Length: 74
Image (cartoon, rainbow, N blue to C red; front, side, top):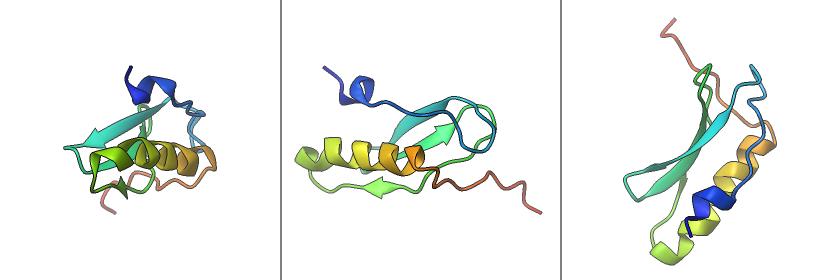
């Protein structure tokens, strides 16, 4: 069973869009909004046994509303 399916994400605190938990090439997790691009911080892990905890921590940060708005370069 994939741990990503067991984690609940709230809607984006900025726009109300759906959050999506992403894994970056086997070293970190973060959550991003599929609508506005806001995202959480990256939660890294070094060992495979820490993977699930990192995913849950990224989701927890997102669910608390601690997000970074997508910057348009201005």
